[in-house]
Amino acid sequence: MAVFPKAAETMADALGCDEEEVKLDSSLINDLGAESIDFLDIVFRLERAFKVKIPRGKLIEDARGELSEAEFEKGGVVSDAGFQRLKTFLNEVPADRFKSPLKVADIPRLFTVETFCKIVIRQQKAAGTAAPTAAQTAGTPTA
Amino acid sequence: MDEHFRAFTFVNRITSVKIGHQVRGSYQIPPDLAEFPLSLVGEAVGQLAAWSAIAAMNFEKRPVAGIAAKIELLNSIRPGDELELAADLESVDAEAVSYGGVASVRGKPVLRLEHCVGPMVPLEEFDDPAALRERFAFLCNSGTNENAFQGVPSVMPQRIAGENGQWIRANIQVPQSAPFFGDHFPRRPVFPGTLLMHANLQLAAALASELAGKDELPRLPIQSSMPIAKTKWAIRSVHDVKLRTFIPPGELLESEARLVERDSNAPVISLETRKGKRVIGTARVSLVSETTT
Image (tube, rainbow over all chains, first blue to last red; front, side, top):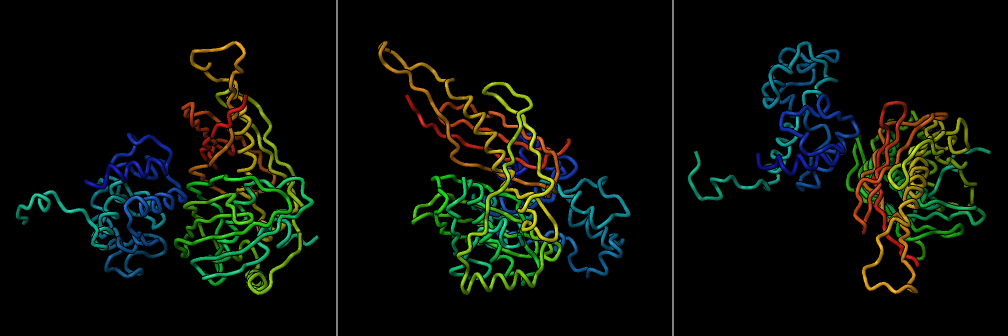
C-alpha cells in the first residue's frame, strides 16, 4: 500500500516507538499501546504528512454508513446489523478480532495501522489528490 | 485573594480576534517578580489560543494541554517585559483545537509554538461558563493593567539517581495546595502542564551541564598557551511534547532525563515523567552549543 511507509513513520513518531513495530495489521491500542491523546496526535500528524483533512469522528461515521445511530447501536452495544456493517467496512481487520457483543466504546480497539492508511487514501481521493496507480502511471488500460 | 483570573492568568488584553481562527493580545509581566520562566510564556500563548477556541465553542468546551510538536526558546525575557501574543488556530471543533503561536517582546520573538493540539473538555467541569464569557468580553473591550500574578511556588526536581552525562532521575512533588490551583481550574484543580515542563527543563539543563567538559581536544596543531574550548549547552527547542493525563494536587511524579542522541553538534535529551508505572508525559529537548573558553 503506497501510503504505508510514510504513515508508519508518522505513527511511530507519534507513539514514540520503532518504525519496525508498526505493521499493517498492528492494533493501535492492543499492539502499539495508543491512548486517546495518541489518536489525536496520529490524526493531526497524518493530516500534515499527507496534506489531507480528516474530520474528527469521521471513521465511526463512515463505519456506520447508511445505518442510523439507533440502527447501529443500542445502549452502547453495537447491534447485529452494526456488527456486520463494521466487519464489512473494517475488512482489513483480522476476522478473529471481532467479538460479539461489541461495545461502541471498544470499536477503536479494532483499528489497525491499515485502517488509518485507508482513511488517508479515502481523503486523498475525496480531495482529488490521490497518487495515480501504477497502471495509470504506465498508461496501460485498467479494468 | 480571589485567585480566579489572577493566580495563573497570562493574558491582560485581547487586541483582535477572529473567533476560531486568529487572536492577538498582550500580557504585562509584573516587574517585581524574581523570574518569569519561558514555559509560562508558552502558557500565555496557549491561553490566548484557548480564548479563541472557547468562544468558537460558545463557552461550552475548553481546551486543555495535550501536544506540542515544537517549542522554540528564542530569547530570554525579564520581569517588566510586555509580551505581544499571537495565536493562529488551524482548526477547532468539539474534540480538539490545533494552533500555533508566537510571543514577542518589542517585536522580537522570544518563543514560538508549532502544531499544538489541545483536547476539548466540557468547560463547566472546570470553570464557570458565565464568568468566562464575561471575562472574554472584558479582555476584548478594555483589558486590564492589573499585575495580579505573584509568581508560582518553586517545584524543583529532586535528584534520586543518575549516571554523569548520561541520565538523571528525579522526583517532582506537586504541591497539595497553591494559589495557581484556584485559577487552573476553579472547579477542578490541575497541575499546569507548563509548570511540569519548567521542572523537566531544569532536569534537562542539569544533564546538559554535565555534558560540558566532555569535549574532544582540538585538532593539531596545539599550542600550549592555547586555551581549551569548553562547550556549554543551552536548550534551543523542545519537541514532541505530550501530556497524557490530568495531574491533581499532591501527586508524586518521577521524571527522567536521558541523553539519546550524542551528535556532538546537536545533542538530544529525552524526558519522561511517570506517575507510578504509568508514563504521563514525554518530550525531547534539543541542545545548542554556546562554546566558551
